[in-house]
Length: 283
Image (cartoon, rainbow, N blue to C red; front, side, top):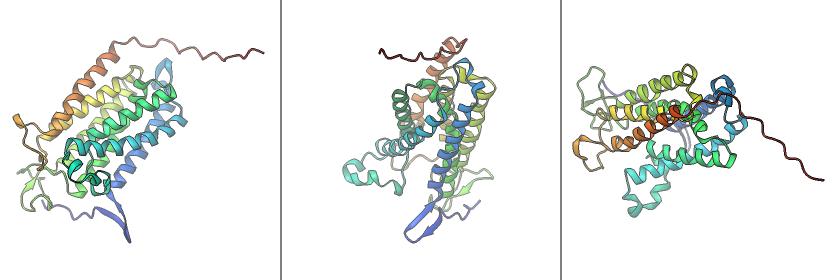
């Protein structure tokens, strides 16, 4: 199957270009923001404790998370995949528009953003993390679709009926459309699993469990798809058939299992916390 004739640029106005990849980030962030706001409004999901943040606070954290995604994703790509540019061409680090973002680096950036925002606003970091984790598959779905449109991060050679010939690979060999596999698993399936956890299993009442399910689910799906995705050519070969994506996902399995174990072990809140007592000033 030949690669569809997609133009990675949606609109070009002089030197200014709007790319599908940039729109994927915008769509993921905006839809994720509204999804988290909807979770916060649905008090029944949170049990006696109630939602951990107000809608105003959800609006505020969006900037923090956006910066975490961009800075973490870019620095993660540099340190995990192309550390040589730190010495050879350090200015390339800030040229984000030339491509090169790491999901695992973005996760670290978002974690730092959530920790900082929760500390500054005195919000339970586990419960805030649960809400944010529930919306991440939305962004993953759009991001992987954009990867496919760009004809990048293609799969290994394949003889399946749906194999695609990617011009940027070699223009000849049919390959797995691994971007679409990731969009389906990391995006759609993982979203549905977390949706079940939040709305049916009521696991938002278990601090950190939903976030743990996200980390574990993403790591499993990413590791599985790495078997179909072409390893990055500029990286050295790793032993035992491992890839950088597999190795970066391994800590997510451990962290996810820990969060799930910790959250299920913690007693449920049986009643709402007492309202804060207003301080009275002495005359």
